[in-house]
Image (tube, rainbow over all chains, first blue to last red; front, side):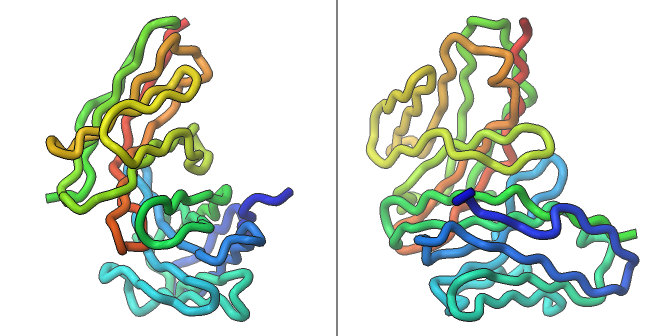
Length: 116
Length: 111
């Protein structure tokens, strides 16, 4: 399978716990994105990497969220001290594109987080 | 003002009819436009991209772009029950590295 893969697919946790999601992008894509989607809404941008560099981070992203992409391959998204409002689908996407025209994103199946 | 707006409610169309979806965007420097299909509980899947004014056809799908009026639309011809999904409009600005998504429009094709 050469698509974007995410793990775990589902995570149920108690409020206050930390959770970590992993994303493996399409191998030849150097751009990796994290989005969050709640019911009835479109995906909301969280952060973006080009290779190992985190180049953009949403102003809406709390300090409890951190993302890494060591060595420019897989990425992790960690949420510390989870809150019920963090319950959402966390989508990872990769892209081969350059800034400007193009920039299609290819999404993984997502990691669904439920905070009790 | 939201960057990308999809204001229509759920759209029900009979099988074989044309489904028409509209999307408006606020930033005049937007350069790349995409339509994604999302089945319930699944992730978005790219179905169309369009970069220039006019129409672009791909099978039963036609995307239309009008930069002067800042809207992009999607037509689904000969709608099939398998087209029942939420359709997300996404826009990318020149020099910007992220896509901004609308909230989506649900399409229900009635057999």
